[in-house]
Structure formats: C-alpha cells, structure tokens
Length: 198
Ligand SMILES: O=C(O)CCC(=O)C(=O)O
Image (cartoon, rainbow, N blue to C red):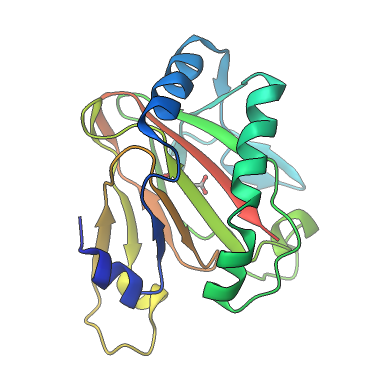
C-alpha cells in the first residue's frame, strides 16, 4: 500500500484502528453468519439493479443494533472530516455492510457524478467512506484503487493508480467524485462497510 504521507498528499483521509481488532473480529463473525443478498450496481430510474459485470458483491443484513452502533461511531468523525475536506457535513447515511467472495469486484465508478438525472440521495453525498472490517490475512485480491489524478488534479502526478489494501479496522474517506474500484477478490471473503457523509 502507498505510504500514509502519500495518501494524505493525495487528499485521502486514512484513519487506522477506526475499529479496534476485537471489534473487527466480532463484526466479522456477525457478517459471516448474517443473511446476504446480491448488491445492486446500476440505477434503473431510482432503483439499483444487479449487473454483475459492473459489481459483484453481497450486501449483508446486520442486526439493527449493529447498524446503530456503527452509525454512531462514524458520526464521531464528522467534525474531523468536515475540517479535512473543507465541507459542511450535517449527518452520515445508514452504513452498508458488504461481502466480496472469490471473483467479486466493483469496477471503476464515482459515488457521485453531478449528472442532471442523478437522484437526490446520490447528489447530496459530500464525503465517501469505506471501513475495512478484515484484511489480507483473510483474503487475496480486493485492493481498493483510485486514479491519483482524480484525488489530486493539481499535483502534477503522472496518471496512475493508487492501491489500498489496509489493515483491518482502517477507515478511508475521499471525495465522492473520485473514481475508485474494488479489484476482484481471488480467494477468501473481504468485508467492508461503506457510507457517505452529507
Ligand atoms: O468495498 C469497498 O471497498 C468500496 C465499495 C464501493 O466503492 C462502493 O460501494 O461504492
């Protein structure tokens, strides 16, 4: 993974141990035993529909208390993220819990693109966040990749990709306009939590 200094020069917010190791283990057990359904990938009107070429992953239904606890924890970062990204952030969206098994992936996409037909729930996103519940000890592949120039257009950096494969418990936050992808998982299961600050 690129060094912490480079990531912050690129405008990525990285917080290691956002979740402690014991919290990650407990959450992982819960995610393994909870119901999963295929995650949608493309918008059909305002409805997300499955398109395995674009995204192959499962959305995991966790108990309401887990969603509430993670939402509250994410909320504690809101002032820091607002200062870091120079944006007014009023709240955090309900987090989504994701599982990527072998061959699962999400091709390059933006979480917000400001197109005229973008649904309101998308156009309000100001900061995207991903929490890594587990790491390479449990799976191979599955790096989160960005285009360096999307993150830092004025840096003069050559066009290239930045790959992140951080330790379990790390939170990464970024501008939702930045293209990013999840590379195919080769083995094991990768668990993440995604959300947006608005
Ligand atoms: O699971 C991840 O690392 C990121 C998922 C993602 O890009 C998304 O849900 O928009």
